[in-house]
Length: 187
Image (cartoon, rainbow, N blue to C red; front, top):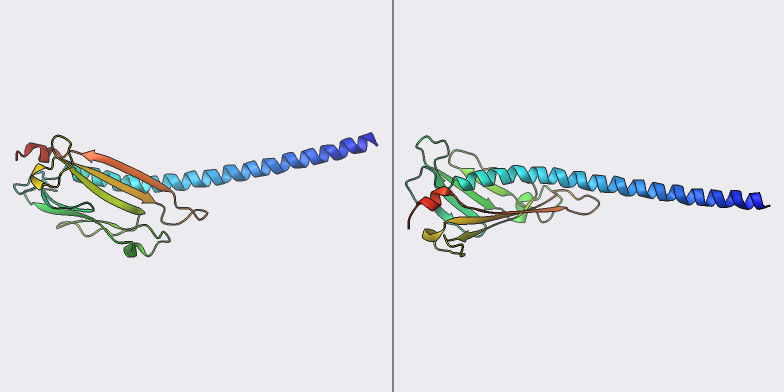
């Protein structure tokens, strides 16, 4: 009788162990999926970030005109010689409303438009949920005076365009960019 109890106890313990192993494997699989989707989102975000960093560092390059023509907390237009060919280009960045990205499941994502007089409007929904700008003077104080602007803090928030298990994973990037062409102009 003792051996039957030992056998039943072993089966119960073995079954509990197998159930725990299956649960552990399911948790690892779910975590792997989440991390993969987060990395894909961050990779898409990095492409946008690289473009924004490059463009914003060029603000005013080669332009005899005011570097900034329109500036706000969610849009900016500036002059730059993109092709280094003597032709002054006007580059625009602006965030759409949420209706523009209706083709995605995410109710919060928008389209970050970027266009110039040489390039078409880029309007692909890539999960941008926020684009904000803050302007600083040479002492690092926030300013709204165009003549005093020497650096710009750019903030971007991203979320997956499609949910993963009902969740949208987010990513935040923020950097203060100091275009050399804004520094060199004495006002």
